[in-house]
Length: 496
Image (cartoon, rainbow, N blue to C red; front, side, top):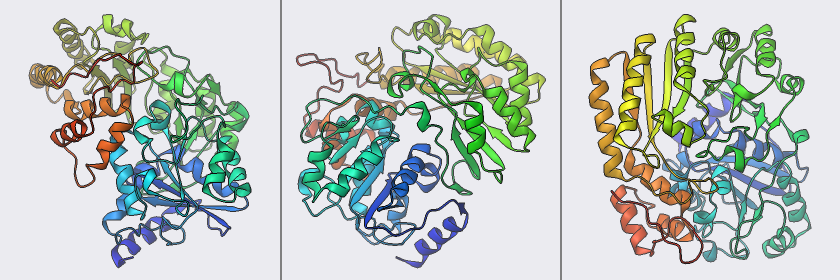
């Protein structure tokens, strides 16, 4: 390990609270295919780290792809011991985002492991992959993983650990776990298993490690609810995470350590969490700051807004998602212009420093008239409060009613983004428009609904990704059915 990497790791460890140091017969790497800061803001990553370390015969240590740039080839280090990340019994990977698919390939290579499952043998670690992507679409990961965990890990991890204790090797371990809830063995299973769902008594999950270098520096994250009661047609939260489980307020508060200065409440629809005000007020009484990711415009009221403002929230963030009321109704978003205008009014009256509105374009049946309605409505909002309009292209996902809807097309989305930018430019600085790339959204859509061939394409992109290189790699592996529809069905994405 070179000195620069050694100093980086030492500095990060010094800025952490809650690191687990132990020794045990069975070693597990919990690796993240992105940066340290993003990983340490992931409750799933931290929960798997804690669950394996709770097993008496297991020790789990962390590794991050970001460090591969400074590590010798194949010698990505584990943070807690400094040992090579590939020198373990189980190599776990947590994947949250479709666009991290190529990074999974890079991560395995950085740890000294062959990315393709078929090129590893009995002496190599078990490559266990979990995270939100495996629940939404595990198939692109199928050529890479020995085991894919689909759904919640709270009950699955102890079962996997017990099976590994009993097994005499990798093959016997796979035999023992075959058929377990949430366990997908891509070299054996022809279809995905049912999701593993954690019961309420296993919740809440919360930060094991609080880091000053996280995306949320010094914030203690805790999941107040899992699942979502909302029927939004584009969102995976309701189907992926199972029925809504609201953690009692006393359980949430009991899990927050006394020395915590800031708490990040996590949930798919926190405004619907029935104890959000009770928890917020109790944390304020302790002198603890509060953060939330976003607020439902139809659920926010003055009391909740005041709690969040007192807790240190600076930007009032809401999602419209559909550019017109017609499209919001199509998405079953249950949000109206009146809800959004009221939220903007609260943000102004209470002195929030920012107001952010999330929006999607490229939705099914969307027309220029829908974009016109969005532009005119943003102008009305800007008369109430300055705002940031954050626009993302719509990406259809599996397990939603939109799984077979085509991607709108790069050219169409770019044209509509250009129009929005042009027509709202004169409102600067009261309106700032931010948007994500239509080309990368197309790639995300391919991965979100692709099969094993998409994982094989990712293998060809280790040394660099681009829109054109992705298209070339997909063509080389014979990609032609990104939707995983029944045999014979074909509905290709629009290249634009």
